[in-house]
Length: 67
Image (cartoon, rainbow, N blue to C red; front, side, top):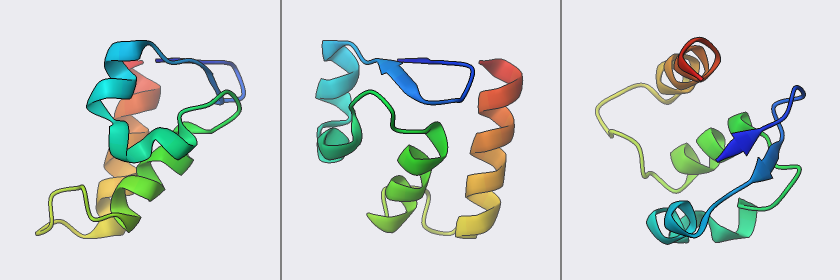
């Protein structure tokens, strides 16, 4: 997946779409990385014993530092 300087999805390849098929409604240009993570939490697809807000903060930090 590729995000622009506003952190909006620009590109998503078929492999990502296959892996994230439960998230297909959001895998379109303009969706922010944060929206994808929040949807992950909403659908309870994250590690359940982790606080949702802590998970969100960690994923955003990783996204912005690791690319």
